[in-house]
Length: 165
Image 1 (cartoon, rainbow, N blue to C red):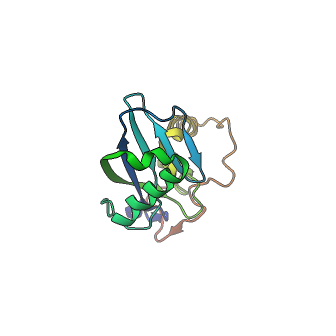
Image 2 (image 1 turned 180 degrees about the vertical axis):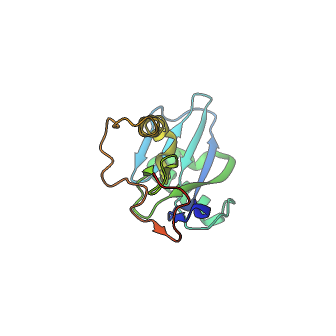
Image 3 (image 1 turned 90 degrees about the vertical axis):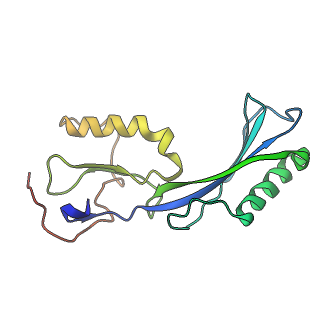
């Protein structure tokens, strides 16, 4: 959007995840506490997530991040202390300053729309985001209010738009 003279403060937020394996599954329900979770999968593996780190575009795991996740999981399910760490990885989430998505048209353009900054909920919110953006592109009113989600709420316009409505 910057070539159009429009910028939004979406930044990467690193999230680390640990995958464990035990000979027998100690539980079958998802445990969620605050912003962390322990998920037993049908294949017998257990996912522990996730960290939230301002680490730029670094997508590697850290000793501290993995240890923190393991400590969290073991405090909830002590038998996980005997689990084998199968895999660790990290990914990036696009975050906005208020952790809410930016949705809607770019001011000054009739054909440029933003759907970004969903942070931890991007996968879950993608169907709704697609529907909202499709409604806007077709000139229809979305089913939900976009108050507080407008794409320009943090934006700075560094140049005049190339096109006007």
